[in-house]
Length: 274
Image (cartoon, rainbow, N blue to C red; front, side):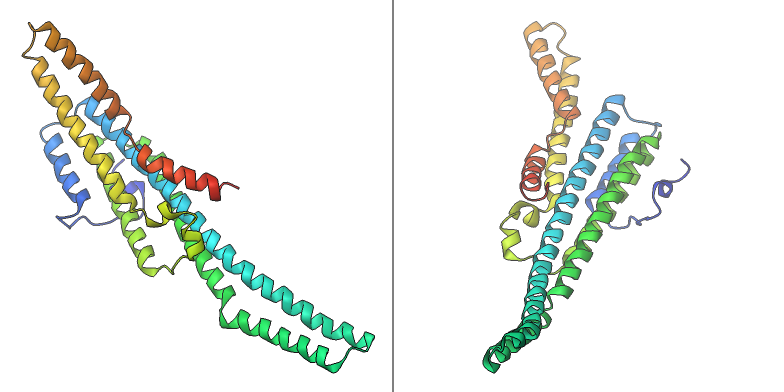
């Protein structure tokens, strides 16, 4: 691919030195300076981290989409219920005179109809339901965008370009989520109580914790490799180091996102899978 922005039309300029993704791009330059690519092991670890990050973000966005769908349906139910009641009461006004109903009963039905219409308009259930639905669509669109980007990563052969594009995409998603948070309306308490983890989770802080753990493991892996080069005659120590190296390598190849993924999947399966 000829340019970093070719993977996606949305391009974010990287000019914030305090941004974690900017720091990672600086690290990339140091890591690959003087060579066209890093070690195969390091590249494999990074690929696994990128895929894991995007899959977790996609799951989180799917849960957020579901929350706003629940909120939209919540208010739509209220609106529909009041509409049906008002139709029943107004319909009764037509039927009751056939049975010589008293004026008091007819007046009461008219009053009830008026109250239903008043509450429907006063609480703006239709408008509120529509607003929640709009936010649901925004999260869904961002989820689809993240999944499409994940499928495009395979087409990058240049490792620096691949990681740079990935970090820019992560910044884009994080920025949009922050914008959604500032624009969004409050989720009803009854729905928050159903999905408290999804509602309160800072997904990027959680991902950064996993990435820090992976970085520590990578440092330990390098330290063990260095020590192995100087321990040729110490069989027990060499065996111990090799066993630890294998365990660390397995963890690097399989980043542990279970602390994020499992609670989200549990809430999704309980309240949204139907």
